[in-house]
Length: 361
Ligand code: MEV
Image (cartoon, rainbow, N blue to C red; front, side, top):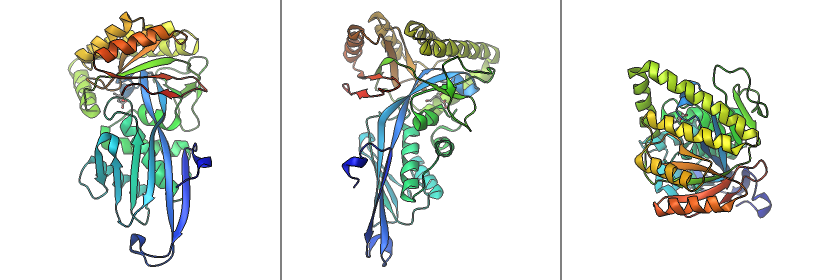
């Protein structure tokens, strides 16, 4: 496998030769190993409303998922994600089989591959596990074929792949997974982003990035949920109460924009306030859960600047924003949440330090 000097590269590729046997071909051939990394994502403001074209802010979770592609004697793509107890192949008649066929269709490798995925991301918990898997697999197989995908192209493919899991995703999960850092999706009605945000690049209109330096505690309720179903339920609510729903969306958009402004203006209290308000509105549209409400409440009592559910909701993760220089509040949130049985970890989203400090989960 790749040498230690390649250890920190996002995608690595190693070619060796074999004289016969593999892939059922008798002649000499290249055996390409590849390795690719993908970010997880954490939505600070604007989940659900982003589906309707409103403003949202997310941060990438670095070093979240790694795919190792190793040539095999089988003709299949065989995926294993031990952390999720997930094993599948491109011959399987399930959603992951469909994803593997999609990836192979885009990058038609000639022989079979074992795709081993290492990840600390919990599955179906609101941290972008499916987007990270799509991104990691696309990067790994394109690398096997010697193609270096431009990020915008990778992002388009990852969004297409995400449809297999989520129907019609907004694109915030795959974009944050591909680009990392802080990603602002500017709502449709706005012409320019708050000062401090720059365009994420050509081909990504409405998406911006900024150095955002925050300390976050993430707590996993351990309650699984299905993004597609929650998004569909919200859509039903929109059709039942359109006027009410529109006013909630507008408020969410306003809050997300205020929070984004605060995030670059070194005003964590302002961002925290926006997060707390956003949680209240998410609750109103029925995507919270009593455990999530309890965790938000405990985090606020612990002195957090703000807290909310993150991702589709009805289970999965809660995020709390805590003062950066003050580990007392952070420790209190961790304790309160641990006491409730939630697995926790802390991240710093600084422009340079996007490092992950492992917690209990
Ligand atoms: C899921 O991580 C975020 C949602 O807003 C869905 C989406 O944006 O596609 C709930």
